[in-house]
Image 1 (cartoon, helix red, strand yellow):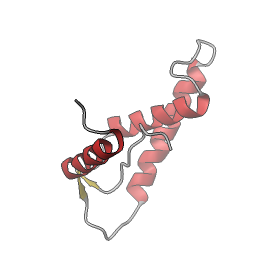
Image 2 (image 1 turned 180 degrees about the vertical axis):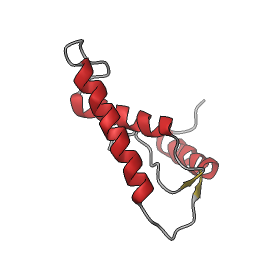
Image 3 (image 1 turned 45 degrees about the vertical axis):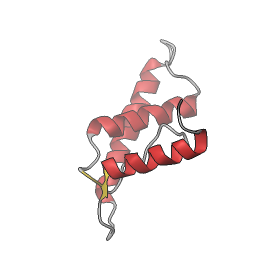
Length: 91
């Protein structure tokens, strides 16, 4: 999975539409192999981002869990700690 696409489900507060759109954009960039489409492909690229964002939002709204919501700050701290172990402390 692309490292820039983050888990969006089961957080408090819920994922925003901007976060869903950003994940969709990263997905389309990864699949298409381009960061910025040519003028000829721009419409198809943007339509794909919009459709994937819509479907992703629908998925997030439909999922059910009994697990308690995760705290964004705690999860970010865990990710930072994992990165420090993986890449070494910045210095």
